[in-house]
Length: 99
Image (tube, rainbow, N blue to C red; front, side, top):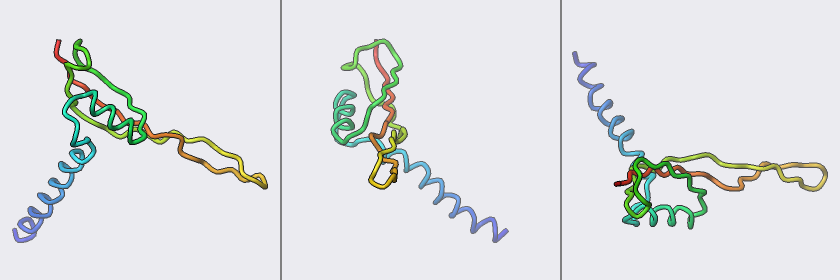
């Protein structure tokens, strides 16, 4: 019984961290979808949007921002050495649009 009581606070703490993590990924400043996309692009991300609904971008709100992947290339260096270099990073912006 004592063991299960000590695991409850640990489980709640872990759940709080897991639930709080995605909130930090979304930009906090912009108020509409286009501003969010512009901000991410200005930070160097390549933005890929997914849209639910038939409305134009000005009728959309951001429902999520998800990390993408690094796009890399191999660059040649003197003496035959190569190095993998990040060209850009993608990010996915999910939009919910009104009709």
